Amino acid sequence: MAQPADWPAGLSNLQKRILSAAVLLPVVIAAIALGHPYFTVLVAVFAAAMAWEFASVAAHQRVASWTSPIPMPSGRGWRLLAALGIVTAVLAVVATGFGQLDIRVWAIVLLGALATGVVAWASNRPRTLWFMIGVIYVAAPAPALVAIRAEPVFGTAALVWIIALVVAADTGGYLVGRTVGGPKLAPRISPNKTWSGLAGAVAGAALVGLSMAFVLNHTNVWMLTLVSAVLGLLEQGGDLVESAFKRHFGVKDTSQIIPGHGGVLDRVDGLLAVAVAVVVANEWAGGSVLAW
Image (cartoon, helix red, strand yellow):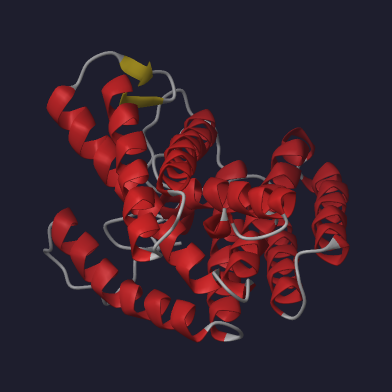
């Protein structure tokens, strides 16, 4: 996906990031506040973009080094495979929005992945498994966000909490990593990540948990702080997984749909991991994590 043609020319990357955030944040905040169907529609749009991005990268002509800033897909039939991923992800999100995260949603994800595998086997056989993974990678976590928001008591607070947690983890990791430096965390996957940055990410996430505990007048402050720290660790893991995927295919960004930020997957990779973890924890505990 190319950068919008009418985006102002001559802006620095930081200016583009700020302007993009200024446009997107009010939309996201309004959708979260309003809930279904507005938030469901927003997640469906984002899921469609992510499915397209994953398919375009999976169809990318792999190169020896991480040089291409925008995927340049090659191979036959990748657009049809992207369309299958989009349909699967959107149907899974909509099914969650009009009900709950149950067997119907997982059936949609499974059937979509199988259909994608059949088409990929005929049109792009060497990448079949990648395209199937892409459907699951997008269509499973996206409904989790809708399910979290739909929780009747803590839905809005939980979504604000995990988004703030992800932002704090990214920011804390970046600031501490740049300031302290030190040994690399995974140099072959993400050369800029350090162990000190990981510690900063976990600390940032824990601080959000601590703050949320006080905002909610939580009786078990340290439990929510600990849970947030663990989620901060998972957020960094989600980021590394997406980085490994991009590096495998020799691309730097999944797209340029968000000027200054890259693709949707580039921005929400950690959020997807956190959302899945929170839904699993909610199911295990029989209620929202924020009620622990």
